[in-house]
Length: 141
Image (cartoon, rainbow, N blue to C red; front, side):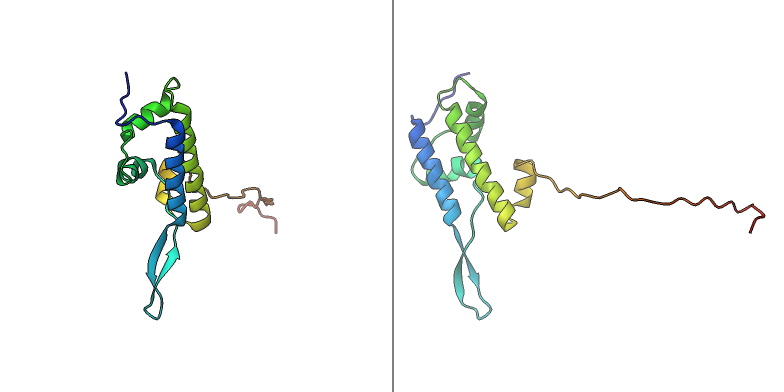
């Protein structure tokens, strides 16, 4: 099945656009009110996602590329000229997402569903227990 792009793009341009998107995610700020009621800008990194990158960010920047479905088909198609590039971009997004989740506690739902992370409890079940056999019917005191 041939995959049609909406615009021809070379891999260097695609990598540059993905890097720019990641930079915007890392530099994002959020307005918050302080206790005194003053509004301040607080750094609040965004988790990069393929969906947002393809459906909104690229289009907002006057560029149309693949649909999400095409992106994932190329990701799996080793013979496509952009396959390795798209794999690299996908990994870059995941690396940044993992860092944000790990260091800022954001995106737990995203981490579980997109990054394969799980909640794990480590329980130590190695205990030394001395077993005393007491026979309630015994006459010995």
